[in-house]
Length: 193
Image (cartoon, rainbow, N blue to C red):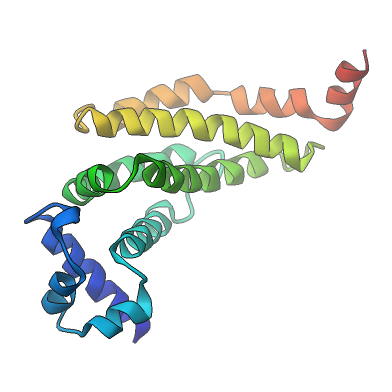
């Protein structure tokens, strides 16, 4: 029942966002549209921004699915772009209504989750410290989020396929080279010299 209520609140929020910006929507608007009382809302979420964050995380989990390997990361990233595009009204309202820090935090979390799985997949047979894998994932996370934010800021006009193809060209074999450079035995020889 809990997930059904949350999904109903999500649907009401998205419906209302097609009519007015997030900062003009109240909890009463959402609960009336949803047909529940305010206390039910507060049972699930502390405020509207908490609901927005939950919607983003749920969408992200659904969007990425199993596309978290070296061979499928482009499909995962393309799905992120497509989902943002499909929910353009929601995303633009959320982007302009909540702080940029919150949007970045959400995108960083989503992208890091994708990248660390890709790095782990590629590093299966390599001896690379976890902190170095994290560094590589953080590096790509920052790059990808920067590209995604710029695309959102520019009105989502460029074809996501073109962007993801360009990312693929930039990344081609670079993760492997980075992991090889950070291999425990190779990295320690360099730093000891």
